[in-house]
Length: 146
Length: 146
DNA sequence: TATTAACGGATAATTACTATCCATTGAGTA
DNA sequence: TACTCAATGGATAGTAATTATCCGTTAATA
Image (tube, rainbow over all chains, first blue to last red; front, top):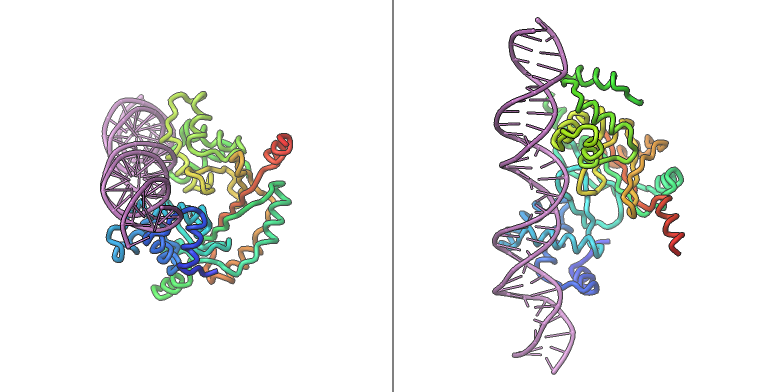
């Protein structure tokens, strides 16, 4: 599912959007991080290389990526959105101690979708599964402190 | 799990919060609706009976309720929070057509929690499961239009 | 009933995000 | 390769939900 810049350029063009250095840079940054950055984190990651980068550009770019399926938007109960370049729908888990957000990639949720469809009578189209707890690192730190 | 006003008053007091007519009114309104209102919806529901009610009071009250376990806050990917007086953790489902949000009460998720704990190595403390689709009513309307 | 810390309501402030404006640029076309 | 122009990027103003502040009022305990 990894997308190279060639592929990103094609998808942008095929949806009538121009291929610009800023958009490629945003995608590149998002693809090479595992920390599910929000707009401001992305902006700060890009600033050193693109001193003229604007926060508004990050937002506009992410809106496009969301629309054409190059990224997904996460709303994990924080005060800002986070972004993920992995497009397969998958659960996320957030550490209540350090705030990191991890993917849960191997999770099989078809049975859940069926159960929910049956219980709700809805015609299901999507889901967002968020879990909360303490990450392995923070569990380790706590042990050391004792 | 239904909580009467007596119980609400006791819980407020036991946490060092005063029992006020506004707080009881907010709880009462939240408890007697199934539509998972946001702050503004609650405010508008209360205005007829409490013309002096303030939106800020609704927010402050809901913050307290969240803290002492009288209500939970939902973040379903909309631009505002919704509230729910049902405290058993349960999934929610939102209709993409009309925006209504329903509870899914009968859902058993212990197996899911275990699977996620194993996959993530996190020490799990909570979860929020959100589903999206089209509610039975909207499915019906669409049929009529054809 | 008196005392006082907490409260409610009005409103200002904050913050994430979106819209607008205009000079610049990507990309199709000649 | 140069031309044309709508789309774009960046600066900044605006929006909307939420939070903080201020002060007269009130619930709770003595």
